[in-house]
Image (cartoon, rainbow, N blue to C red):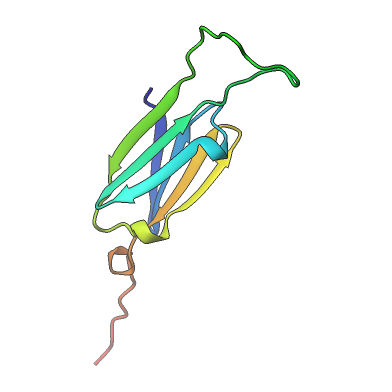
Length: 107
C-alpha cells in the first residue's frame, strides 16, 4: 500500500508527514540510497494476550513509498519521529541552499 503523505517546506527544509496506522517502530524501516528516500512498514498483527493465531484470513498491510530527494536537502541530517500512526520526517536544507541575508555596505 502507498501511505498518504503531506509535504511542507519552509526556509530551512521540508517536513514530510506519512500516515502509517498500525505500524510499530520495530516494523518501520527508513533508508536513503543515493538521492532516494524509502519508507517501508508493516502493520503489527493483533492477538489477544495469551492467545496465538492459528489461522488468519486478514492480510496485514505493508506500506511502501519512495521519494527522490533534491540536492539542496541534507539527507545525512534527517530526523524521524513516529507518533499515533504518523511518521514525521524533518529534512533540513544544506547550508548553501538556505536563504541568507546580505548586508549592503555604504560607501
